[in-house]
Structures are given as structure tokens and as C-alpha cells.
Length: 435
Image (cartoon, rainbow, N blue to C red; front, side):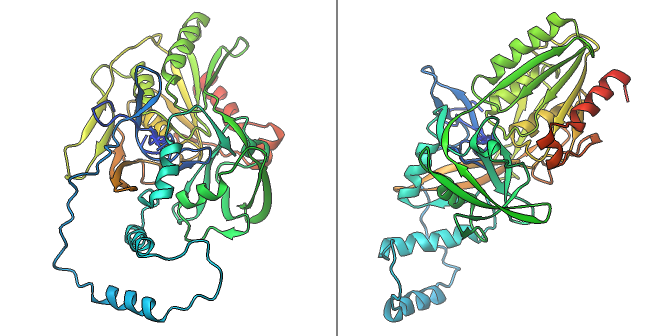
């Protein structure tokens, strides 16, 4: 979420933009950060951006369009088969089991629209009937605390529902959920053919209740019970190791406060006298686009491209550029840790740093959440539709397989459980030896 961002998706969730009335991308909550979707109330992949004067989140890059939409029929289409099926169902269908959702003319129309949207095969393009639209609006309301399990999910390249990242200190992390885990079933319901939004609605639930996930990891399936709780999203940790002379900033999400906290951490970095910096973005599902741009601006010259919203000719591209805020000591070496849980705004920041040769990426390939969504009102319903993709300064599409690290280092689930961290060790080695 740019969620998505959150994803501010980011990302946004969403994509994770400050052009009225497009205010919010969080590659997670409507990607982020994230998004991909945060199962704490975030919708991944829509862009988030900034907060209003009262501090609440507002939309950016998610124009809420409703009135004036073109409803002209496409006269080139033959709907004969559609009406044949519709009439057969109306005249011959016999209900043989209890249904909690009685069919009406309106629900039939919503179902037809859902099928049309699903035919595009994009996990981030989703139709929300009125009740689901209301839930989604609540999800992206901008609250900092949520009740849920605390992880972001999305579809991998094979269309399988996959954990992008569990958030630090959440029920999902405590239950042993890892980035890359594939979710095969939720409370016994298969996720095959299920959208991320549908999965989120099943995983959601009140504090204290339990959700059982069938998880596939390294070829083995296990049942993981997660007790839902109030999710307080962590933001940043920073520390200095006098023995190695390395300063480390760990960022868990690109929130509305991340940019300021990162700036303060950089001030501490300068005060330490160190010129060796590790930025840990592993398991960071994204968030506010603004935060990613602000952070990259400390490293990239003023006017340098950080990320481009590519609309493929359907409207003018939007290029987000560095403000050149600086503050980084001359000669500073930077290593950025990424993994499959690094998505949306994390990929925007890391991709810009890699393309401009300001940092060396270490770890494993990132998730690849690089699309921008708009949320469009359709009466009381809503359509979330992918309208653009994120491109790094060198023109790489983040959605095309994510970012490839300069130095590839794996970290197994057993190593995570035992506290071993070969990726961090390799970053320390790189910064101390130069290779």
C-alpha cells in the first residue's frame, strides 16, 4: 500500500503525489505501501501521498470519479449469448441449497460486472459491490491502528495468493508467517481463483478471534492459526555499531511520519561520524509515495528522476523528482537490504538508489508491486482499476519481476527462526571490505 503504496500504496494499497484532487497513494492502504493488500485494513496498490492539515490521510492519485462516466453502449458487441444465459438462469435455475445472498436483479448485475473486471486478469483491478465498497472505504480511512493479523498479501507471478510481508510485532509474525508463504486456504476455503480483496475480507475479523491459514512453504503445507489483534504499525529503528562503524536504519513501512523520522535518523547518522550506512527494507510492504521521494531526495541530486508513473500513452506520464535535500556526508557508502517482502514504495526508493548508483542492493529479488490504481465510484459500488505502472529512473518496470539485488544472498525460514541473518552479515562485510 503505494499501501500502496499502501501502494501510498501504497501503492499506496496502491499505489502507493500531491496533485489535487489525487492525494493519496499508499502502496498499501488503498503500497504499498503496500499493495498487494495489508490484512490489517489496507488495500494495496493505490497511491497515497500526504496528510491534510488535521493529520488524517487523504487521497492522491486516486481520483474518486463518479458523475459523468461514459455509459454509452459499445454497439460492436453482441450480447446475445449473455442474454441467453441470463434467461436460462431466470427460467430454469432451481435453488438446491441455502444461500446467504439471495439473487436479485441488482446482484446479478454486480456479478456480471465482477466477471467482466476479472477477465482482465489483473489482481489489483477489482470491483466492489456496495457493501464491499463501504468496507474498503473504511479500510483506507487512514487510521494508524487496525484489528487484524498484520500482513500484506498479493498474487505472485503464478497467480497464487502470497504473503508479501508480515509486519513487525504483529500476530502474523508471532505465528511464524514469512514473506513468500503461499496461502492455499482460509478457514478451509480454497483461495484458488480468489482475489486479494476477497481474501482480505475472509482474513479480517475482530480482536481475539482466530483465523486458520493453510500455508505452503518450501513444498510443505501446514495449518497456521493466527489470533487477530489490534495492529499498531511500527515505523523505524536506527542504531550505531561502534565496533564495525556501521549505522543501520530499519524501516518497516513508509507511513506519513516516515520521512521526518528518516531525516532525524540521518542526523544521528551524521553525528555518529560514520560513513557506512545500511538501510533495511526487508519485509517493508510500502506506503506513502511522498515518503519514498523525500527519502531518496537526501541522496539524489535536485531534479533527478526518482520514479515515473507510466500511463502508456493514455495520459501524460508523471515524473517524481528529487528535491536535492542532501544531508549525506561525502564519501558515504550505502547498502540497502531487500527481499520478497520489499514492495511498492520500498521498490521505488531502492530502485532509484540503485539506478543512480547511490547504493548497493543486497538480499533477494523484491516483490514487484509497481502499478498505480484509481478508485472510481460506480453509484454505491466502486471500481479499483490499474491505470499506470511505476518505472525506475532507468525505465525499468517494477512490476516486471521486481528489483534484482546487486549481491544476491538468501535467508531461509530456519535462519529467520534461529536469528541468523546472512543478508545483514553480507552487508556488513561489503561495507567493511568494499567487496
